[in-house]
Image (cartoon, rainbow, N blue to C red; front, side, top):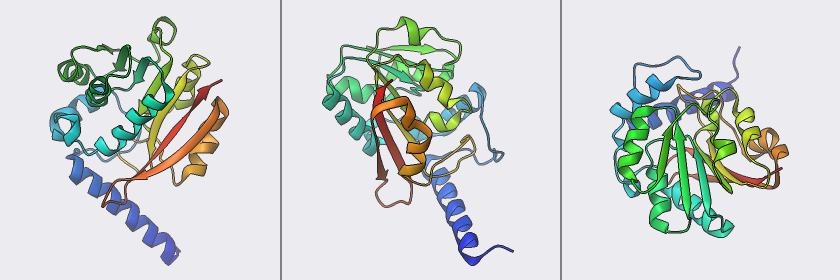
Length: 223
């Protein structure tokens, strides 16, 4: 028998999940959870108007402003963005004028095409993160991975790809979604999973204004 507290928690999770779907115009017909392929993300791109707007009009803008500030503080000059999506964050980084070079990668060709339209000055590659040589060949000193690690089973393997000494900043959510392999309840859970890959590691929690949705921003120097 479920306790009242467990039942209430389950209802809250479902309410957050469906609220996110409505707000971001996510697909209603895909309910089985787990890692998805490029076709899923191509379809979400076509159905989700939030991915087409200028970055300042995006639901994620509040989080991107924090990331731009982190880049400014870190004084890094060459960014490799893993799971760059439609290039909205890249556009924000470009407008801030802080870095010298950028390369974004994503396995959704549709999203990469949109990224090139959003930010034509930057380099974008439609590649599989587990098959690309960019982690070795591209000259980067910072890696960004926002709302990416929770979508793949082998998230720890991707972090292992990152060159030692690289400044890393990423975000992971506190809510379930159809393509999420995992989500996190608090900063301690994020720390337990990722801290041993970094020095100067820290996690901050950010809540979307007016919503229960929370994002955990993790950062550190890859060992």
